[in-house]
Image (cartoon, rainbow, N blue to C red; front, side, top):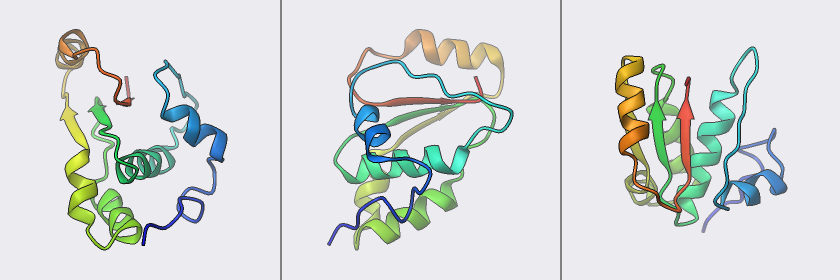
Length: 114
């Protein structure tokens, strides 16, 4: 049984989750990036069958947090985790290269700490 994302993502409403599934460019910024909410959204998208891509430019991807959410969303968390595609960049040049070489796909792409 797949649980709904509401208990996991209290700060994101259904409109944000629906928008995340559409091909578009969205910018989220602020003094403190809501990393856990964004990672929860990615995990939920993966649970829905999407294959989200993550470019991590600041070592902000918390794999333990994502794995815990995947276990709460499904009795087979490995299926969800295999849907996520993570690339880490340790310099601005590596991040630029990831962006330049990223294929144009319809799958959601989240760039952490650009």
